[in-house]
Image 1 (cartoon, rainbow, N blue to C red):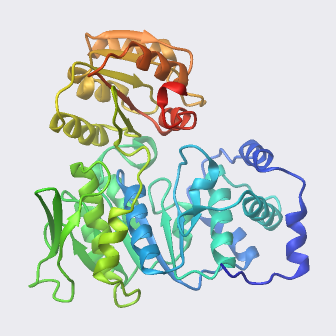
Image 2 (image 1 turned 90 degrees about the vertical axis):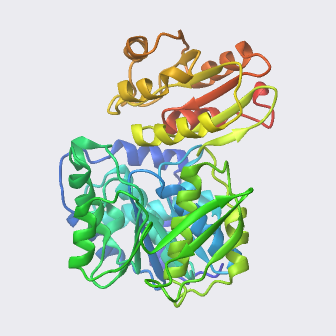
Image 3 (image 1 turned 45 degrees about the vertical axis):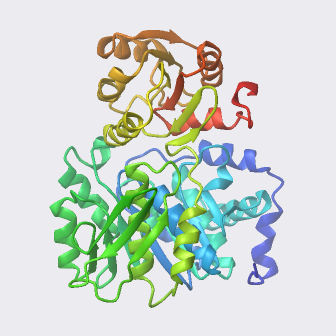
Length: 444
């Protein structure tokens, strides 16, 4: 991609001798931990960077499905030939996954340069790890000639660093309970935070069958052009294919998409997210025209690592980053629809600020053996505490292992032909294992 030529004085900051790992360690070490529920700090740094995005911007918020919806939209636009930037979080294996240009993680050198630019611009202004990374992503997007940028909110929406950008369209995926300490203890309260990404007169895709009234009310107040699943559009699956259809009485300009190849694992949640992506593309079609064939091609080519990712074999493996009850309900429904197996073995761990008990209660009846481990994070649930919760809500066998990869290897060794290993509960868990899993996971 072509880049704007920066003045020499601006490029001097890229001469830092820090490696990417050193930068990430540095950013974590200066991580701002005080409670500052405003966007003032981020906006001040943005002003100093003189940063703007002269392209279309689409912002994504919600509890579950944001990242998958971004990947679908990204793939459709790349298939069309557009130059696309995408920012998602957290990453599974490598930090560069968070910032992608045309579906390719940015190179280490570009990340290092972007971090140096942000560090020079902030001049001591404290930033969180996420805020620092968001500003770096926006810098990278600003120096590349892009047609559209896709921005996934990290937490909430209203006060998230991503929300410093003005978007052309806001997408809100299903909302459920998660991060209650920060966002509120009801879906209506959480919905209010998510609705913060909506813009006056902007387009809005509400891809949630049970969208909170706080979101709808805010969208109406802001006079958004609302497209809502189950009202303005719907999708159906049949004979190995699926279709997306608008309600012609409410959305006359949208096209019907028939005989679409079912993407990814084909689970209900996957199709739901894909339907939201098509609604976004149709809503933006006047600004970013897309041929119908490119929609089907983009959806079919979308890769969703760690999102109900199925690896077949003598022992079937399912990797899913599901880490809240609503996501676990989707995972459980997917498992229940698959062909039965001898046993389900779980490789499992969670962060301590999640509803571990409810997750175990929901999955427990399906699990014959739990392989527990502790995550490499200050927020990890201690291993013994995790075992106590599992023992309270499940009568199945429990084994404890020192780290995620060890737990996975032991589960695979103990599994017999016709068993299934399910890795779930956290991005940290799935990422740690996928990082080491080769084409033959037994060789990890």
